[in-house]
Length: 168
Image 1 (tube, rainbow, N blue to C red):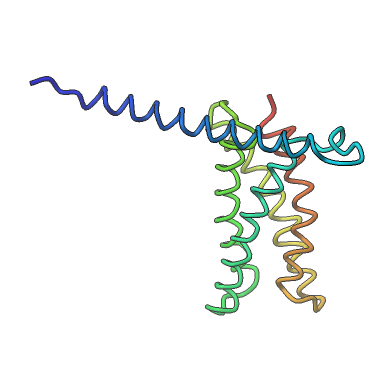
Image 2: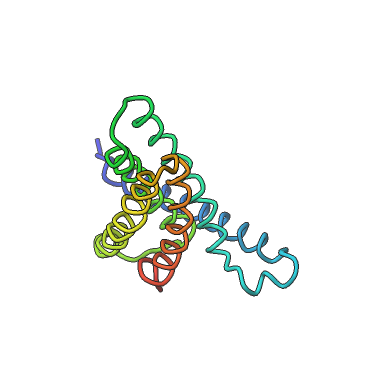
């Protein structure tokens, strides 16, 4: 009897990659089609990757807020700890989805993750923990503080991901 397990694992792994690539291609093509239909000449200003980033990070930001609310309001954890835990979950998902679907990066993961971690740590200190905590301390509701910080974070993260993390 011939052992086909090594061949099967390689084939399945290749099929998974091909499936992910097709989904990524479809996602990117869809983003290009939407941007192409933007009115008032906006298509010359809005990149398809920006639309993809907004969609993906809108999803992960929603997950961030659900986890934050669960940890702070549900479990009673302090805002800085709840913000940190929620952000770790969201940034890992954001990296994976943006790498696979939006920027379709094929660069080695190790060095790319290292750069991403530096970008995320700077983002975390400045916007996630810093701005959210300061606004909450000034009396702004913690969820609104997180949304306001999220707007600033979004601009910073898109620029960093497009021109630093996933540069071609």
